[in-house]
Structure formats: C-alpha cells, structure tokens
Amino acid sequence: MSNSSPTDEPGPLLGAADIRELATALGVRPTKQRGQNFVIDANTVRRIVRTAEVRPDDVVVEVGPGLGSLTLALLEAADRVTAVEIDDVLAAALPATVETRLPGRADRFALVHSDAMLVQDLPGPAPTALVANLPYNVAVPVLLHMLATFPTIDRTLVMVQSEVADRLAARPGNKVYGVPSVKANWYAEVKRAGAIGRNVFWPAPNVDSGLVSLVRREKPVETTASRAEVFAVVDAAFAQRRKTLRAALAGWAGSAASAETALVAAGVSPQARGEALTVEEFARIAEHKPVHEGSAA
Image (tube, rainbow, N blue to C red; front, side, top):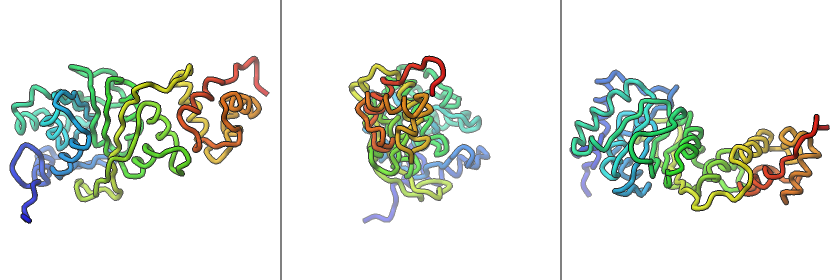
C-alpha cells in the first residue's frame, strides 16, 4: 500500500498546504463567530460529493464555501454551482480560485455575496441540490430557510456538528427529537449519512461532524393548516418539552382546556409529550386550533 496520500497529488482540489497558502495570502483566520472550519482534505470533499449523489445535470447551491474546497469538487461533478458566502474577503477571492484551478468550469460558477438567511433568489437555473459544510452556529436555521425558499431543491447533503446531525435525523420517541427534527421532516425524508473526523478541518473543531441527507418529500404533508401554523404548534410543544401537550400548548390554544379539546379532536392524547409526535400529528393539531371569542379563560 502506498504511503502517498491522494490529497497531496497535484490537481484542481485543495489540500492542506493549498488551504494554508490561500489563507495566508488573504490574511484569513477562521473565526468562531462565523463557525468557520475549513476542510483541508480532498478525499473528504470527494466523499461528500459522492454521498450527495451529485449528477452531471445538477444545479448545486453551496452555503459557506469558505476557501473553495468543496466548491471545486462540486464543480467537477455538477452542471453548475452557485455559492453563497457572507464573508467579504472569502467572497472576493473565491471566483479567482475557481478560475485558477478549474478554468474550464469557471463559467459554470456563480457567487452570491450575502447572508444565506437573507437570500430569496439565485442567479441562473433553479437549484436542484444543496450541498454544504454549514457554519455550525447557524446550521439549522440556514438549512430550513433554504428548503423553504427553494422548493426545487430535491436533494440535500449537509455537514453539521454531530449532535445537530443526530437531532435533525431523530425519530419520534428519541430523546434528541425536537424542533429541528420535526421541521426538517416537514420538507424531507431525513437520515444520517456518515461521520466526519476532526482532523480533516482547519482549525480542528472540538466536536465531531456528521453528514445529513434530506430527500424532499414527493408529496407534502397532507394538511389544511399552513406551514407557519404547524410550526407554531411545534415551537410551543418543545418550548416546554417536559410538560404534557395539554400544558405545553395552553398558551397556543388560549387555555389548557382549549388545548385538550384541540388535542382530542386531532386524535392525540393530551397527556402525550411533543417528543412522541410525528410531523403529521402536529399538523392535525394545527388544524384544530381553537377560534377565540374574546379572552380565553
């Protein structure tokens, strides 16, 4: 078995030395504030692209491309890639990195210099996939925003903190099942898709990372309630997750008695807790929200 690592072989992808050289040239130090940890291993980004099942006709959106490790691997595999980057220095440098290392694909790359939470549209064809090493401090809100804003995103693979990956992929009854689990499940079938070690990042984080796969539901959750109405029930149920739903939804319904009426009508036990419910059950509860007449008792 050879001692040489594919990471060190010349090619368009960035290795550890390339990342450090780029960062030094740009005067970049990864910041905790933005949850930045740059991937320095070409094998890891190849694995992410493979696990994401990126196809030659895919239009991929990437959030938080950093210095471009994953961007380059995505450009090799997809039809086009749009990267959303908030950092001024990184956003300014990325097009040149793409032009230098993958000149034949540079016209397939677009950069959006923005906070991903504020992005409402993207240049070019509608995205079909989201693949990203998400900044850990905003991973869940960014993921949910992108899924809500771009319904054409059919497949998603994100790298997040391991415990966040567990929460996103958790099923009802699991102790880490909560708001991210239910909301992600509103949009997609969610599952863990592997683990990523700490040594492939610079700086090495003090937590492990995990891959999460989300495949958009072929049919949306069947409900007459809006997404906002369903999510309001989810937020209320988990704001006091140790309480029974009768108590936890009292504020949402106007009173504990009204909450009990709504729960019974929805076919859910008032003594159940939020962590036991599927997204479909939350939707049924939302459909039975009491209509207030005057102040609730």
